[in-house]
Length: 119
Image 1 (cartoon, rainbow, N blue to C red):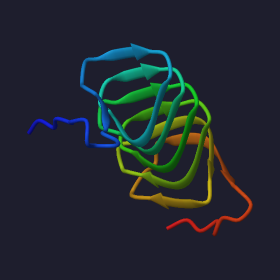
Image 2: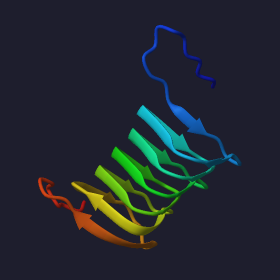
Image 3: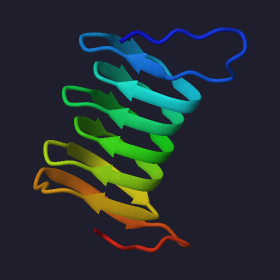
Image 4: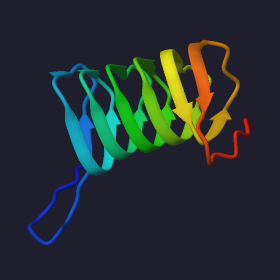
């Protein structure tokens, strides 16, 4: 399925496809999906790092869906960490959801104002 945008649309997702390598910063007020590799800062409302996706650098988002690999500091409101996800660095969150994962090697920091619940 392909998504096309037109001049009437205010936002569209940024998609880094499998096999793609991006060096530099990505900023989007909507969704960023990463199935390839990003070396740099990622700023978005929602970031999805798919299986096989890699982010090496700083990540700031309201929502993180991590299926792949993240190396660097991440500051998010809600972190959703899935079974195959791997992360090193520091994960700063308000709410943390971990599903069947034993591959996290990161430091977890619950930010003030967060529920600090792990589900």
